[in-house]
Length: 391
Ligand SMILES: Cc1ncc(COP(=O)(O)O)c(C=O)c1O
Image (tube, rainbow, N blue to C red; front, side):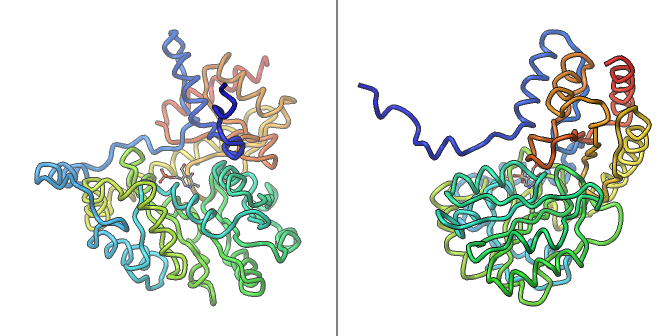
């Protein structure tokens, strides 16, 4: 009798992150001798800066290997409050900072703290796949907000207003954005803030690409009137300091939600890795030269890849203002995004992600991460050119 030996149906609502699936397939092809250019995975191709590594290894040598406080090391929470507040021109209380392994848990904590059966959560489409997955898992209804290519992958304010109902509990924003590289303007945030105050919903502002901004200035919704008490701010160390494997991120959480976040942390992870937190403290307190050097290199790559993509037949690409992704429209190739991505991997040796893995609004697009050297980007473009000449 194995009747109960199957996962609860709730688990079937979880979806995967295609970047990890495509990476596994690309690595399988590499093992069989194929040369693959990796444009699928969203992690900076730089080593974590040496002083950060040294601070973490010093912590290990000094025996800082035990559990730490559930919300994070006090010194790190203070440093985060000061740094995150300084970058956005607001004051944050260190007591509202919760450190966790990566920024991802905060998406789960936010959705589960705020929404469940009968509630609705608005999220960007195309958007980071975890949003939809986690909303569906919570029992709430995922409500996609289309980002429009013709608006530089911003949303249409009237469309947004049309999605808000009395059941809206949370709106997820991500700017600079994955997968489009789009950046929201202050006027967009004002539209959302006005609706949030009028309809009493909260906002999860995912700002993990804050430092990867090539044009304009970063605006955070947390700064707008009435928003400090209803915004959960999400950021981390993965992208900014090239620390994806350190698993370290944080949320800045209004007091009324903080206890729930802390309970999720203690139930799921106890605390983030202690020595990673010492590394992160150095990341914030040390010189920021490593960040600007990396961002300048990303800008060069962006300019190169966007110009080259726009020269390919059947391809057009909006210049992304932020993050490190190009999101070209490939409808002119006559192939769906899944077919094109699959064929590029198998036949041309270029790993990309199909736009539809970021939601229906991504159909007709590919995501190319330019977290790879200019030399490899040139190689990928050459392969794309050859493939598209004789598809
Ligand atoms: C928009 C967005 N939010 C959150 C994350 C998660 O980052 P972390 O590695 O800190 O969990 C990512 C990672 O790709 C992302 O693209």
